[in-house]
Amino acid sequence: MRLVILVLVLLLGGTGFAAARCADELNELTAKVERQQKRNPTAQSAAAAKELHRASRDARDMDEIECYNTVARVRHALAAPPAPPPDTAAEK
Image 1 (cartoon, helix red, strand yellow):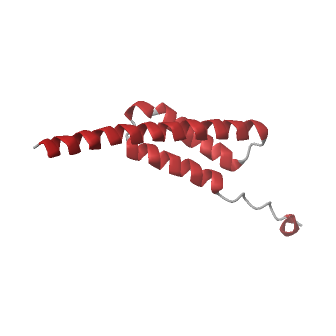
Image 2 (cartoon, rainbow, N blue to C red; image 1 turned 180 degrees about the horizontal axis):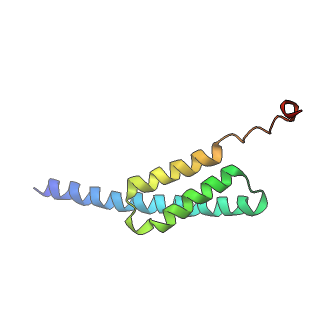
Image 3 (tube, rainbow, N blue to C red; image 1 turned 60 degrees about the horizontal axis):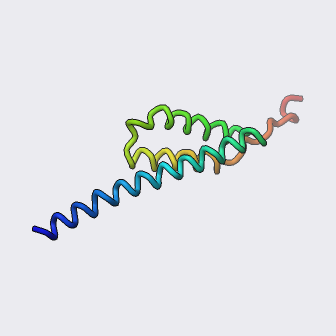
């Protein structure tokens, strides 16, 4: 019985720690995206800023899984290749 209680306490404590770590990651990503938006705005950084804005709006209702999904979407948006420049030869 004590073992079961100990396992439950450890699991619940670990969950809180993971959620706090995810919130820290979101804060770091927010700072990074804001710096990039000020220095050199791109479509990728704009998409990442949009995801972060949506996450900040829903932060109270966000659980750990949603938090990590948001982190993944922001990283994916930042890592996306830039759009190719328009082909001016085709227009002539």
